[in-house]
Length: 274
Image (cartoon, rainbow, N blue to C red; front, side, top):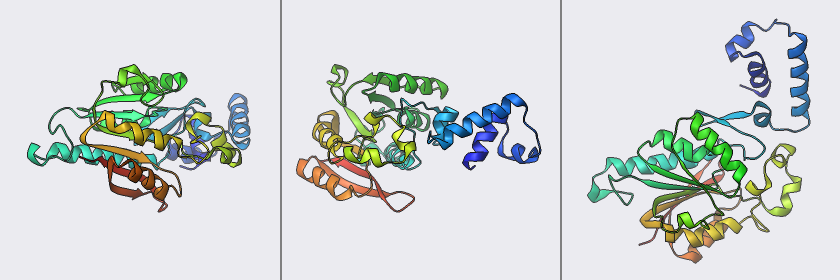
């Protein structure tokens, strides 16, 4: 559905077909005023998802507020690749497993969980996995917990600046996944109003957009089992610089770089070197 259809189907409590079947329906005064208010908010640049208070990701519904980054379709590629890796591992015999742990419980860490869309989607599609989800924002974690309940999933949420939490110090994972902030700090003010409405902490990647990649790639090996995977979403034009950070670290082998629906390099798949 386009934005107008989404807005009015939500306002009227109708699906897309019902919206067109009742296209001659006249709004009462209260609904007309609500429609005007909503349209003014959208024209001012407020994201549609914040106006509706929800969005869809991986076929699931998620509550979103200005305290969390709005899930993007491109990030579904990150989730889909993770599901593929874990499912492949579980379908192979222990002698040929692609993830350490074989038929044991797969432990996954989601860094910078925001709305919880990545962790919760993985929990729905990989119900046997044990998933921890980290965020530095208490407000974001509150929304993520609501979304976990909404989607009937069990996630261990941890407040932490990446790996800083004491709770993570003894953890060891088969897979770490992250969609970190990757926008250059001085470019944020020039972004579309819709994007600027999102929490800066979820956008700002530092002076060159790479602060979190350096920290994450440097620290992740201590929390990954031998042969474990690190999957990262990257921004436009960041393929070579992120590859360079990985090559300098020497802890990871790049297995794949996946393009998004627009042909942009979007997901880097790496494996901890033995």
